[in-house]
Amino acid sequence: MCCRYTRRGASRWPAGCFALATAYRIVYTVAGGYLTARLAPHAPVRHALILGLIGLVPGAAGVGVAIAKPELGPLWYPIALVLTGLPCAWLGGVLYRPPVHQ
Image (cartoon, rainbow, N blue to C red; front, side, top):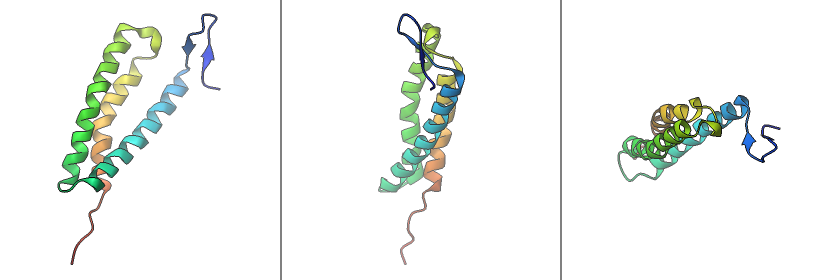
């Protein structure tokens, strides 16, 4: 089990759980970029990048919270989310191949 509880009831997760969360966030960000590109009426990669830029806002806020409250978890986790968000959204957009009309 990843989560353990202290006597006060606050949870403290081991680093492996944060690594697992980072991995699935990367997968979901690529999938979100792909879906955004697929639904885009034109310029699919640009739409996926816009999604990545939108994701940077809460990611940067997460870094600020992690600095202010270090007891919530390791600082590397929100930093990793900020650093991987835009490239993963771009990758999702690039992976989408629009159908060729003949």
